[in-house]
Length: 212
Image (cartoon, rainbow, N blue to C red; front, side, top):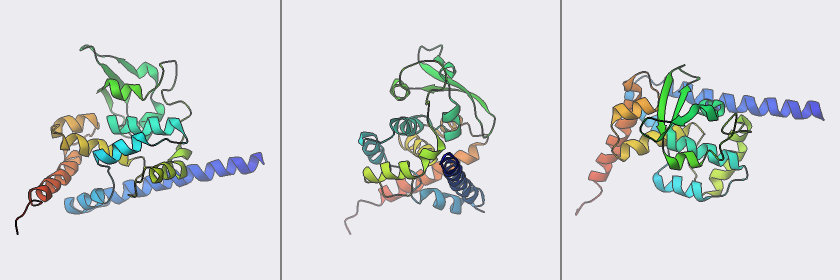
């Protein structure tokens, strides 16, 4: 029985890794900006209304909900959320809170401000990992079940919460340079993809009112 449980966990982890790799490779393989924008527009981010609905929907695994919403508030990748420790969250000189992290994917060191509301999803302060017991096995069936319960039918993976952060920030007027720094992008051209999505959305809204 223990052997079967161990095998099941390994298969779940492999499924998550393959899903993430497929998503990242698909975007990276896009040969031009137009195709990249199309890939990101196809259900890879949530609206503010959808985010509020997801937040209001109970989740069978509380730490999954807290980590997901925290990612929407901060744009952190799942790998960085998993390694985030309380010692990384400190008071900034301006009196607010910030995270001092070294991203796993790009090995970028960054100090990122976080809001009091985002901090509230971290739970009670203690030693060690902030999102203790948060595991990759939660990113498949449990996440899909929670999204379904919230009435969100888009194809949303955990990485999409990072897309949601970027598009919502730009929609609310945050400048491209700031969003790029918050996402710890090495090149602002990477962040520009989100801006192009928002430009298209603004164009659609401009044409929404018609007397014809």
